[in-house]
Length: 106
Image (cartoon, rainbow, N blue to C red; front, top):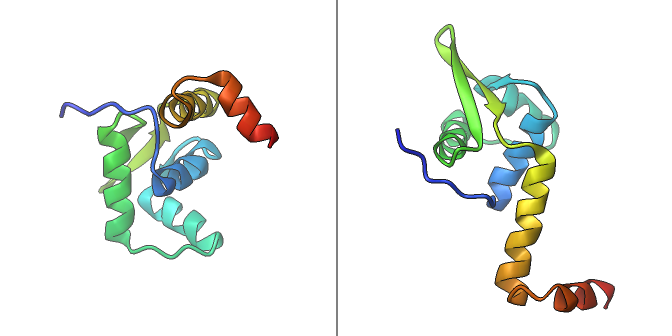
């Protein structure tokens, strides 16, 4: 499967990545439990869909474990943060670091 690469995340994707960064590897059920502990109850199918999207985008890897899979973050948290900031700088501030800093200080 040829994955589409994207260095940024949707809000839900970032929520999943935060959980995966906090653990070495997780099953779909592990992700569901972690989300539930945060007060976020999603159906198994929804969780599998988001994990599939993150896998397709190249943010995760997975290995077969029994009848399911174990997922692991492929993107390092610090690099993802840099990518998010660079994307925001480019899209919201037309690459102007001065404009971005001025907005942050305002």
